[in-house]
Length: 281
Image (cartoon, rainbow, N blue to C red; front, side, top):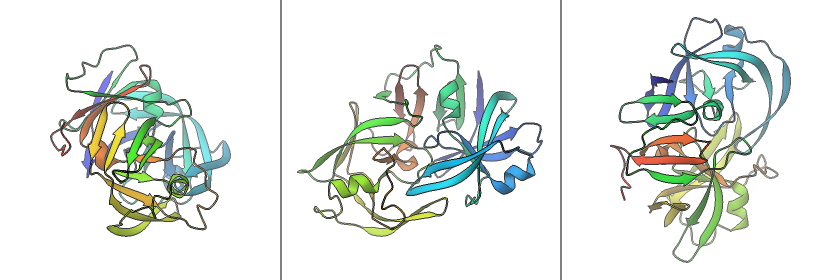
């Protein structure tokens, strides 16, 4: 239906789009960890978005209040994606882009991202996307809006943890494991050695994190990655009662090593090692 170029910023997929009749393009991050679209309040006011309602939204580590603007048209080049709701966040904090475009696209189209050609293509459901012979099929469940994959995480040769991880192009990690699963399986204290520490901040909500290595990550049943970096979330006052309903996010540092196709009609994501892949089978 359309194929548009994107800017590859350390793996992150940056799109230039227009909203409604506003003539200036916005830089939106293609973020499969987000349920929809979102911009900051300053940007929303500049392009004249109308607020229809207010609600709470879940972010990494907690919850925040947002406003919603309904029935907007998003232009990818000249290709219109109509009737889109856009969340408006008080705390912007993006720096190099104006907002996020999430699973809006994957709900309406087959989405194919090719890092080698730096293009994002949309196909109508039911069309063949001519997947390469060496593509790896990983089933995905999108019943609650997020793209969830069943996984087995091996933190050591003796310890394996079953988990549900989100396919998240907006997460700046190989894999981040959220606090509830870390706490349940004592992942920080059962032999894990942190190479470094830091914090993750999502819309003003901060949580401590610990970086190290996993023995193996398996995205069931077909993709196996050995000795991959992993980030474990520590406890804080902000995330003490946070229950996201999933166990963590597969992030862009791993995802960007594959050209990928999201096909929610088939309930699969197809991954093909690209030119920067360091985990070739």
